[in-house]
View: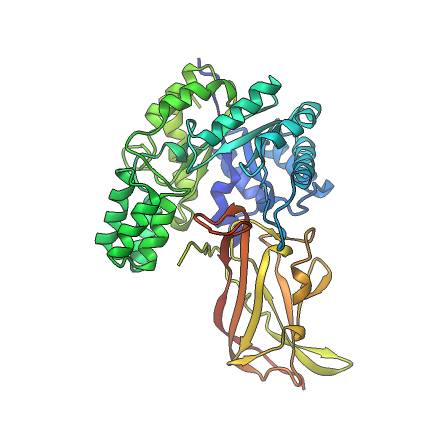
Amino acid sequence: MSKVKLGITLYSYTKEYVSGEYTFEDCVRRCAELGIDGYEVVATQMIPSYPYISDDFIGLVNECSVKYGARPISYGANTDRGMRYDRDLTDDELVSTTIRDIRSANKLGCKIMRAQYLLSPENLIRIEPYAREHNVKVGIEIHNPETPSTPAVQTYINAIEKTGSPYIGLIPDFGCFANKPNVDSYDGALKRGANQELLDYAVSLKYDEVPMDVAVQLLKEKNADDEVMASFFTMYGFLQFSKNPDLEGLKRIMPYCIHFHGKFHYMKEDGNEMSIPYDQILPIIDEAGFDGYIVSEFEGHESGKAPEMVKKHIAMERRILGIER
Amino acid sequence: MGLVMKLRFTDIIQEKTLKNYYVNGKVCGFQLDVRLGYYRGHYLSVIDELDITVDGEAFAQADIIFCLNGKEFGVPELKHQFSEFWTILAPATILVRKAGGLTAGEHEIDFKLMLHSPYMPLPGAAVPHAYTPIDSCEKKTVVLEECYE
């Protein structure tokens, strides 16, 4: 029997929430309707009293918990190193903002907090005592273009091992295992007038792992338009894909994983995700005995199909993991 | 051209908010509400540029006041607001000083709001402290319903 628990990040409902179609409560209700008892909240998105937790907000969260049986299990923090106009935040300042986030996560009852890679390995070690004290495990999100095997991730593993603490860890985002180009980015570029031939050329450069600077040069020689270039930069940035996703790397880092972002962009008719191989990813996590949450993170906001897509995503995960509702 | 984020889940310029404002009983300018065009809120300090033209008329930066959370800020003060948070749902009110205000009827508003995403270093940037720009600009024809003067 799988110990994996399925959750949803309310970020999946970004379009509905920002447009005013859904309130916070509506987002929680959507989760509950799918039989989900735990959700992640992106603090800078949905906490009205950010960076603090007001009594009003705790009241709303508790009320929703009683009504729908779903609670926040993970606090999504943003490591806003560039929030000042004149310089980056110093390490001391970043540690301070992270401690505040840990306190906020604790107030909401979250046992997991997602931080971002701008919190350095040294700073992750510095916040460990606060994470432990508050019983909030803090994980660094492994997001495109990083993968479990990139050098940056290894520096975090070294930091985690140095402390030997279970209170700091890693949170892989499945987007880093994409094996096909991002459908929204590709279609969006075409819609905005990108030259398809050059866009496909950009895709082929990424598939063939042509180094970025060389690829830029090749595209410039062909006078690639701005839309192709913008899409190209995302393919080499936070929407990367690879013929051979780093699944061996995932197996290796499982002991450090405290939570997962089940990133997805589009659910196909056959019940699988368009560009991320869930049928290969989930068994690795399950077989490692992972006891925690994978939260569905829908990123195809523009489509306006979040409720339908999240439902299909949860169904896919249940099917692969053999979890009954 | 590098990467610029543009996410539109809401109008920036809010409908039915354009009106003239009064000081000591006289119309001294106009105001309108705007929201952030992104997926999350931001500290005001990530605002890099805020400007407005109406029917082609430009205004001095000193004549634009940004109102949020019960507070008022001059445009040059925004970049210092490291702890004033603008949530993604909250409208901010923009006051623009203009003697006599605007006439009733349609006006072409060109609102410029550029920010940067403070957790997303600009890919391939040559200089440090360069973050991905966010375009929250909007150009729109808006109706000022009625004037009382």
